[in-house]
Length: 123
Image (cartoon, rainbow, N blue to C red):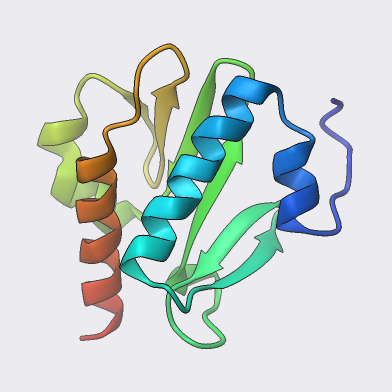
């Protein structure tokens, strides 16, 4: 899979990933939809994004991405700050966290992060 592949849908993106990555992305997607069943699925920056509010712009979306050795969750810098203490074992950026594929995803933590992000949007 080359970095320049343009995807037409989230399904196409997920199906293009290696099996282990695909499985982890589907788990992340399930976490998002568990918190917000009506999330709008779209592609943003050529990766899956989920708008947590109707017609949600970039700031109101959570994005996910697949890589060879990890999956990325992009919940927003405010969410990353709030959950910093629980994320110390993971590689992270200002608005993202990388979950390695060789370990189970911390589902409960991910759901709490998504709920927190959604609450901030509803304030």
